[in-house]
Image 1 (spheres, one colour):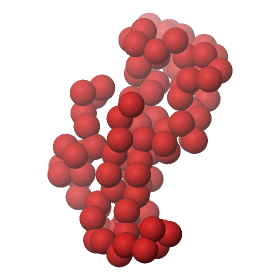
Image 2 (cartoon, one colour):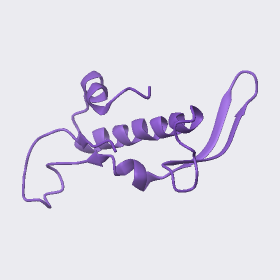
Image 3 (cartoon, rainbow, N blue to C red):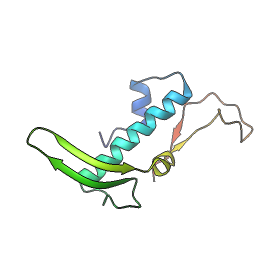
Image 4 (spheres, one colour):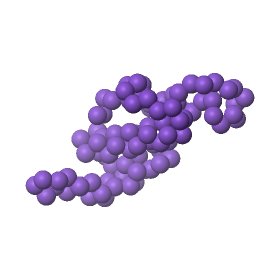
Length: 99
């Protein structure tokens, strides 16, 4: 799931509505941010995309209590064609920028 990029996601799950696509990508990035903390790739501190409060396992279920920073996850998505702020009216899918 961590190696699953936005291009693959959009190709495998085509969504015509740009807003729905944007929201789906935000969910994908939120899940990836959580998995990065779970696997130790990110520390999960208060300034991270996923700030983990508690991770527990009861023998059958894993529970991750965390705060996802919508702003940090949204920064990964660069939309084009719908806000009309740049003056361009392209009909492209959302572009994703990984840092």
